[in-house]
Image (cartoon, rainbow, N blue to C red; front, side, top):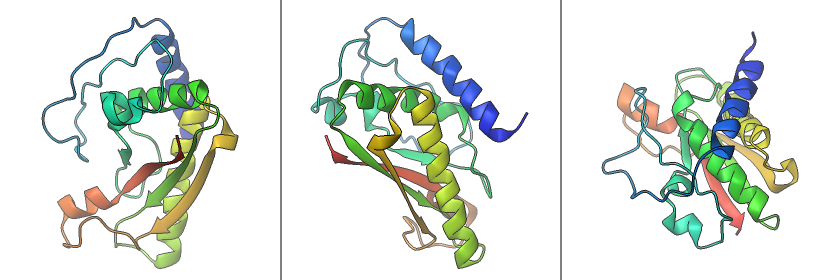
Length: 171
């Protein structure tokens, strides 16, 4: 089964789980939600309609960085719940818009990293659309290795640079 099919299947399963969840508001998680490969517990999304203020207060919507493994553009399972939350926000607020900014670490050529950043942004876009977000509300931009969050040359730093940032341009 190819990567796109796996991502879509996982997204559909998450969407089904979201549809059956109760309205629960949890406190934000304590500690960083960084690029670790371990599984993290995500708060349950709200069952009610999201409003613009929820972008700053809802712990699920506050997760706006999606990390990737080395040379990968497949969405990691721990980010599926966040994709469901952001997709629900897009459904609840049709006037909202967001940009998915794909990034890569410094390794690889400039052209390769720009392409990888775009593929990563498209993977997040596909996950949002699979959860009910509208493609018309999404745009993908790749910065490749041009906008690092960390400039050291070590694995921890590279892991933080392999990411897609979710930027709301209209709430």
